[in-house]
Length: 205
Image 1 (cartoon, rainbow, N blue to C red):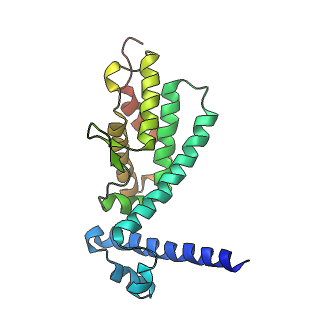
Image 2: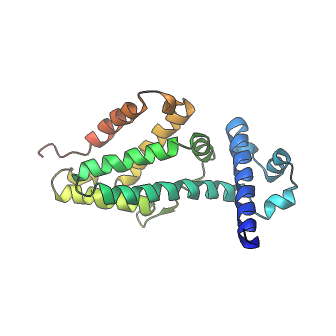
Image 3: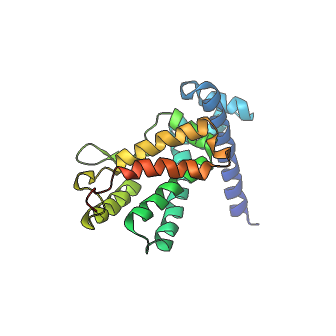
């Protein structure tokens, strides 16, 4: 292993230690009680060392969110490729299922991100003042296709951010109550999405 590779691995390992400590502090004591000094104490390093990796606690949460978001995005791209022949509503359900299962696969991290109340999952706003990011835009495009095909009602255009908000609330309930460990976890997700997506359909279709 080269020196460059070793340093890269050491940096990744240190960041993981910082994130793991942050997750534990947030989930036990709340985001408001998270500090660089407390993280440093927990992992037996000086605060100065932590500042070499993160400028503040908000940046740590941002890094966690990017890690999860990149995982979701990668899985979604693969899903889109593999299920492109499915009806548009089934594609949306597959994407939402992946979103829920990915967040639930990292329950402590997902819980810490949501407890931080940092708005990184919505990242930005569009000109109408509503939350937006690449994932929301992609889902909006799928909804628009469904509207054009007469599968969905006309008035659900540009409502993906509402759907994502509902899903995030559902995921928080999952991780808080450890529902991901239940034998019927997949069925619970299916029931939720039946209700959520059911409200999108054009009654005349």
